[in-house]
Amino acid sequence: MQGSPRGTIQRYTAIDYAMLAVVAVVAAIIFWATWFIYDFGVGLGGPVFARLVSYGLWFIGAPLAASLIRKPLSAFLGETLGALVETLVPTVGGFTNLIYGVAQGAASELGYLLLRYRRWGVGSGALAGALAAFPCVALDSILFGEIATAEVMALWLLAAVLSGAIYGALAAGGAATIRR
Image (cartoon, rainbow, N blue to C red; front, side):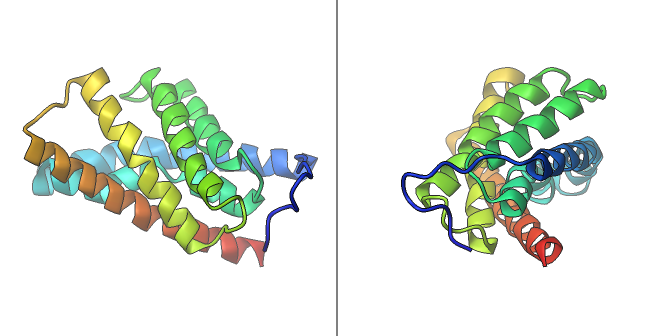
């Protein structure tokens, strides 16, 4: 499905807002559960493995919302509203969840902008998920002091990018199934 022709504004409908609300709640539940998956991953295979199996789940609100709604800012709103709902449900991250949501949502939105809001498939979801890894790893360092050697940081980033791409593609594929 193509985006809107140049010069036209795509307005959000009541159905779009309802889908955003559902995505926000679903994403928040996934975000909450991901804390347990991350902790399990650390115990099972260390921090690189934990990031690989979990980080993309924290990025899933953006590609899910964008692939369902297919309008500008839907990725940003899906991730940010999911993080807001997660923040309201006490989790380990507390208020920082919202900071992450805004940053990751903006990075994911950039993926759809780069594609000129014309592609909403699995590849777009993978790109959006992968891009969310960059602010996430940066915020891990800034907010939680997760700083290591350059080699280890590169591994953490690579694991987060791969995880984001995998889960972003899965979210877009799931959204395509829902849209049918």
